[in-house]
Length: 311
Length: 299
Image (cartoon, rainbow over all chains, first blue to last red):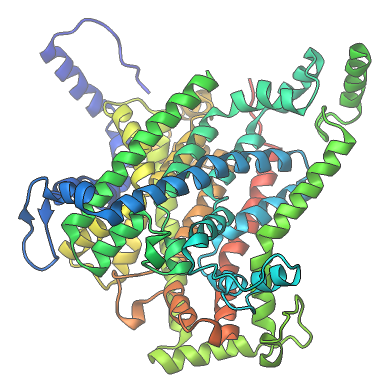
C-alpha cells in the first residue's frame, strides 16, 4: 500500500527506488503470477504473434515465409470479398453495436424500477438467448424457405407475401435476418454489467433528486443515473465493440459459410475461411490484424464520446 | 403545482422509502410493462418453442400449422438422443456430458481463483507496473475474442497440448473480463478495511480471500455466470479431435447437422445444453439480489 513519493530524482536513483518498491511489494507479484502466466501464454502471445504472422505465408506445415506487405496489399486491392466483408461488418457493427447497447441500457433501466421478483424474471428473459449456442434450429424452422416455414406461412396467411420468401438463401434478406438473430442474442455481458450498475446506485441520490425538484423519469435518468454509472457503461461499450466486430458465428450457423454471394460474410468469417478452410494462416492473421486495428479505433472513439459525456 | 408535487413526493418517501421510485406515473408503468412483455415474448419464443418441440412425439412434431403446446408430452426424444450418440460415434453421450462438466468445473474454479488474486492486488495495492497491467487488461478485453483462435491453436501445437483436456482448459483460465469485473468491484471496497487487516498482520492472500472477496459477492456471482457459460458452451473445434475428448456442444452441433429431419432429437439436445447455464444463472442471480439488498459499509 506504499505510495510513490513524487520528487526530482536522477535516473539511477529512480531505478534503485523502483527496485526497492518491487522488493517491498513482492507479495503483490506472487498474487499476480498465476493469472499472468496463463494470460501471457494464451492471450498476449497469440495477439502479438498475429502481427508478424500477417507478413508471412504460412500453411501450418512448412516454415512461415516472409512476404512483406503483400498480404495486406492483396487484402485491400485484390480481394473483392474482403471489401464486401468490411462493408457487412460495419453494417453489423452499427446495428449490433450502438443499437443493442442503447437497447440493453433501456431495458436494464426499465427493469430496474420493478420489484425483486419481476427484476429477476425479466433479467432472465432478456439474458437467456445469449446463453444459447444451439437454438439455431428453431430459427431455421421459423425462417425456412418453403411455405411451411413459420414466418412464410404467417405472412402468406395475412396476404403480405404471395409466394414463400427464401429468408436464408436470398441475398435480399440474408443480412437483415442474421442481424435480427444476432440482436436477439446480444443482451449479454454488457447488459448484465449495466443491470448491476443500476443496482449499485445509491437510492438516497434519487430521494435527494426528488426533493431538489427532478420531475420525471427522463430527468432522473440523465441527471442522476447515467452520470453515476460510468465504469459499467464503459465496460459494456468495450464488450459491445468486441462482440459486434467479431460477429460471424451466428451467420455461419444460420446461413452457412460462405453465405449466398457472401451476403452475410463478415471479416471474422473471412478470417475463418482462410484460416480453417484454406490453411492460409498468414493471410488469415493479416485479416485478424486489420480487425484488431478497427476495434482499437472504435474503442478509442467510444471512450472519447463517453468520457466527454460522463465528466 | 410544483410545491404540491414536492410535498407528495416527500410523503411518498415517508411511506415507502425504499420500495418504489419516487418519480413516474401509473400510465407510464403500464406502458413500460406492456413493452417489456412484448419484447420479452420475442426473446423467449424461440427458447420456449424448442422446449415444446423437444417434448413432442413424432406424430405431433411435423403437424402443420405447428402447435404451440404439447398434447402428449414424451421423453422419447431425450432417450433417442443417447441412442443416436451411441450409434453414431461409438462413445456414449454420458462421456460427452462428463467432459463438459469436468472442463466447466475446472475452468470455473481456476478462473475464480486466479482472477480474484490478481484483481485484489490490482485494485488495492500500488506497486511498480500496476498501471501498465491495468491498461493491458482493458486492451485485452477487446482482443480476447475468437480472432485469436488461430494463434492460440499454434501456441497449443507448440506446447504439444492439442487433443488433450489441457487444450480446452488452460486458455480459459485467465480471462481479462473476469479480472476486470473483479477489480472494478473490489476497488469500491474501503481501504480502511484492508488497512485494518494489514495492521492485524494478515497476509495479502488472507486479506484477499477472507475480507475482500466475500465483500464483492455480486461481482463474484457475475463472474461465475460468465465463466460457467463460456466454459460450458465451448466447442473443442480443432483443439480436440478424438471422440472421447469432445464436449457436449460439439456433439449437439453434430446432431443438429442432420437438421430438420431429426428434429425431435435436435431440439432435445439443445434443451439439455441450455439447462445447466440457466440453472447457474438463476441461482447466481438470486444471490446477487440478496447481497445487493444489504451490502453495507458507507461513510
